[in-house]
Image 1 (cartoon, rainbow, N blue to C red):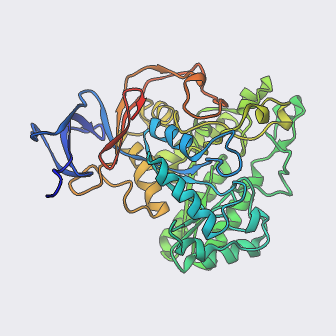
Image 2 (cartoon, rainbow, N blue to C red):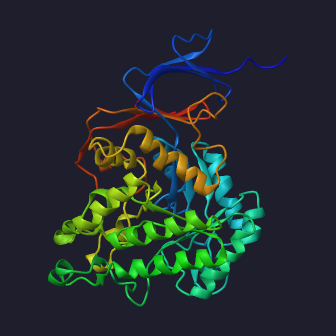
Length: 438
C-alpha cells in the first residue's frame, strides 16, 4: 500500500512581491498556485504579509570541511545557509586537503547529503593543490557522483595565462565554468589587505589596488572569447571591473559562442574601506572593501544586469585566526545568515530593484550559472518546492552570538535590517521556521 502524499499549503504569500496567492505543495513539488486553495490533511502555513521567493542559491561559500572544522563544518554551514533562506550552496575548494580530485568532491557532496538542510554542491579546484601550475582532475570531478561543474582556486588567482587558457578549454567540453579570484599577484601580493589609496598610506597597510583585479578580469574575458568557453568573475569589487564586464558582455552577446558572468558580495554592496580606520580585522576581506564610488558602481551594475548574481563569500574563521594585528589576521567574514537582509536594504528598500529582481540575482541566475536544474526555478506548477518566505518589515538586529555558524567574524553585529527570512523549504520540507532549525 503506497504512502499518502505529503501536502503543504502556503496561504496568502506575496509571490515575488507582486501577487498574493496560495501555494499547494505535494510530495516536494508545487502542485497548484491560486487563491482560496484547500487541501484535506495538508500542513497549513500562514504566509500573510510574507514575500515568497524561490530558495536562494549561493555561488560562493566556504564550508571549511575537511581541515578546518574548528571554523565551520558542512553541517554548521548548512545550518547557516538554511537560516539565511538558501536551498543550495556551492562549497569552495580551498579545504585541506584541497577539493581537487573526484574522491574529495564526493566526500563534500556526501557530507552535504548527510546534513540534509541544503543542496551542497562542491566546487572543484582548477589546479592541483591550488598551486596554479598543473590542472586538477577537472573531467573526473565532473563525471563523479558530485557532478562538479564550477571550478575555482578561490583564495588564489590562476595567474598563469596558459594554465587559465587550458582550464577554459577543458571545461568547455562539458559546459563547465571557471570562477576566477581576480588578483594579479605582481600588483597585489599576499600581504595586500587595504584598498590602495590615501587611507592605506595613512594607516600603513599594504595596498591592494583595483587595477590588480581589473587586469585579470580583462585578460580572462579575452581568454574566454579566444577559447569559446565560460568564465565567471568572483567577488567583483571595483568600478573598473564593471567597465570591463560591460564591454565583455556586449561582445559575448554579439558573438554567442562564449560567456562571462560575475558576482558581487553583500559586503561589497554596503561596506566601504573607511571602516578599516579602526584596524578591526573583522573587516579584512579579499578583495578588500573599496571606496564609495566603487560601491555605487557595483550597485548600478547589479541593478542593470552587468553583474549577474549576489554571492556571499561566506568565510568563517576561528577566533585565533582573526584576533591578530590587521595585517596578520585571516581574510574573510560571515555572510550566509545575513545576505538577504543586506541586499534587500541596499537594493530593494532603496527602490533600485524589486523582489523579483532579488530572486533573479540570488536564486534563478546563480542556479543557471552553476547548472543546477533543481534549483532557482519559478514558483510555478511543476517546480521543486524550494521556497523562502521573507518578512519584508521585520526590523531585526544582528547578534553575532546568535549565529548558528561556528565562527563569529560577523561584520553586521549590532546593525538592524528591515527584512528577515522566516521560513526556508527544501523540496517542501521546512529546514528553518520562525527562528528555529527544523
